[in-house]
Length: 407
Length: 89
Image (tube, rainbow over all chains, first blue to last red; front, side, top):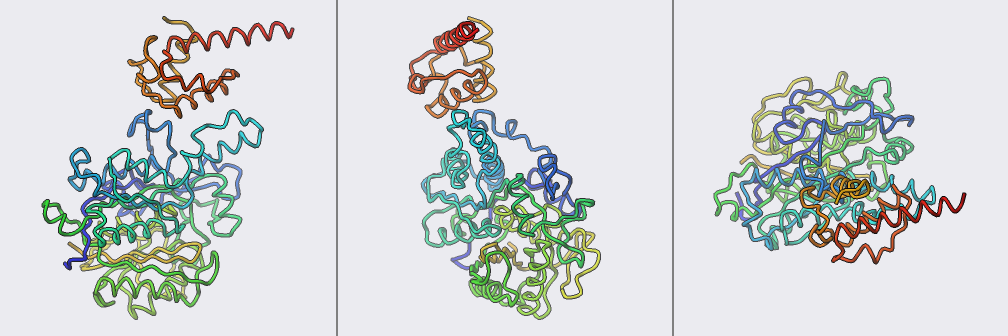
């Protein structure tokens, strides 16, 4: 471990595969897709999504808190509390000034905004909640975590759409390397299963329209894939300066060793088919970690199940690795949780290294003949892993690649 | 103090604003109930929406107002609204 390494000491997850780290890991390893018909999206061209199983924010947080916040903040608070407890930290006693919060988010409180916009359309201006803005601005998720835990260091939200959660982790890592804080509560959160998001993404041609078979709709790398599926959730990692973690005798779950961030500079929504931006991000992350391609034993792919992403990602991995290590795509099970996706998948990558077990990619029945990858399918695969990559790419052309090393 | 209006307001306070029901007493001020100005405004909007009442927002921001006084104020507004409806007939 080098002095610049950052330790992952806590994890928190709220995902369609399960509430909590243990339930999510179990769900992912079981390989059962969570996409199903979503009554909220009834009547729309795409009326299914991956939603949380029985999430009860009032029971988790109390009405005193939930009345003023949107779902994306509720999920993040629940995941942050789990991660901090998992790290063996006590917000009641820590030096809050040395604790930062960096959370990725794509679309803020679009669920709340949608409801308030209905009142505006009906000209019921006085009925619009005074909480409309505080509930829906994306940065409120980091602000509410600061209030909840008295985390009083640097506090911000990153917005790189589908890569936001990974960008947040990389940014948090930089704050720790700069010694701006000792601990960062970092990750992503997104509540995007709204009518406007479903309609907007489907009009853009990004969503699977497999309405006759929601469970089979998210199928990364499969020849019959036709788009991604909306998901919602939060993933939080407690990141710590390695020496801080060592000094307090914390259990290190993995080392966060490398981060590479680039832009395609190519197209608003389509990936660069030549994959230049992604290639540079992987190279930068590996160089940052002081590792070569031969040291990487697993890739947690962005793997959205769109035709273009999976093709481009498959090609880039071939180019960079020659013979890429085993790959998996968690979005096949939990859908695309947009701003939370990169953080959820980073947490899953940490769990993958810890358990030396790769969760499967669901719905992969026939690999796209143009994609030459060893994708883990059907059942979880035990595999010896020293280090792994977690890829995230965004609408907008932002790429964020993270490198984790086994503890 | 228990009237239909008072009980309805207790429900709004506990269900919508998360105030602990055991703390809602007639002599508790908004400050006692830890209702900040944003919470008071939210309560006003909820009551406007549900009861069709219009509040003076500055009135709602008065932290020393007790819950009992607030309940009486709402009752007065409801009575005025009823008599206005009768006048209109």
